Length: 342
Ligand SMILES: NC(=O)c1ccc[n+]([C@@H]2O[C@H](COP(=O)([O-])OP(=O)(O)OC[C@H]3O[C@@H](n4cnc5c(N)ncnc54)[C@H](OP(=O)(O)O)[C@@H]3O)[C@@H](O)[C@H]2O)c1
Image (cartoon, rainbow, N blue to C red; front, side):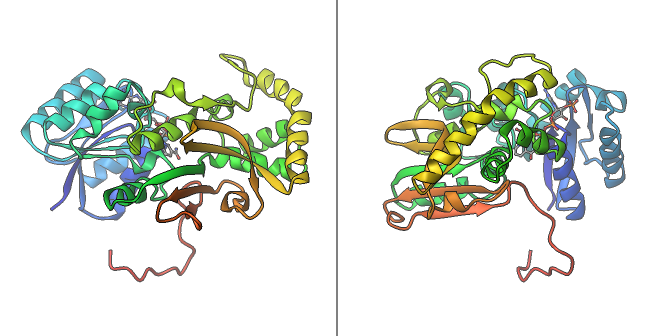
């Protein structure tokens, strides 16, 4: 039977999900798709042709309010759906304002899947309420789709104890450090990352370290640590509070960091180590920033935009458990044929 889905957000992630669902045939039935301007709601399921139309409409930069209901109308229709049936709500927005709605969906017996980190990094009490039912999944929020949360949960559920988590959780920052190691000035590496589409539209969003801090907090909270975001120590890779600084001006200020970054990379090299931008959850606290790691570490081997998570646990102490992969899903090579059945 098709899984009924209500999708909030029709940006990069929302559209990728809808396209994946279309490729699966009729396994997923979208009852509603909303963006920030409005939405399309069909209690019997949006037909595949209409869904494709919505996706190309969004790809042209249009808002769903122009082809469907206003946002308020769409939300009202979705609330009626929540009361009438069961299914899964997907939050693929980057909004801080979805918590109330997500709690309502869980209360009505729906499942909730998040790509959006923000609902999980507000007050601890919100996190606790969101996760209490066991019907919330948030694998996509950390590690670019690598199975990190599922593995952590499985370890905890089977009696293991976690001592330390260290991870490269930003493909963008991983790429930047790799380029600096290759001798490229930091500010130039940032321009290169922008040109390749690796950064957010304003690179300060990546360089501030705030997004990695959110991921670190999600990992810490998954372990049951009742931390708040302000308790995560963050070392930014840009001047503090770039605020609304125009991008070109911001990029010029980064030149001031070129010499310092080079020195830090060289200093690490002299000690036989490499510099990585890590998230760390340990008994000493949760922190995010530049850290030196041993050459032999799986964290040192990470290349370009790869994500790597190293779990040191009671079972995996001497040889920690390593989860690594590309910083985003990649299409299989031509001719690739899976051996699994689904
Ligand atoms: N991109 C990635 O590779 C990736 C990977 C893992 C997790 N994430 C997370 O996934 C989320 C989505 O990422 P993205 O790259 O798809 O972002 P995006 O392209 O900016 O898309 C965000 C979507 O959310 C919509 N939206 C905003 N507020 C809304 C609201 N109140 N109700 C309904 N829709 C709303 C936006 O509407 P408009 O179209 O009208 O602006 C847009 O369609 C983010 O939280 C991001 O951090 C992204």
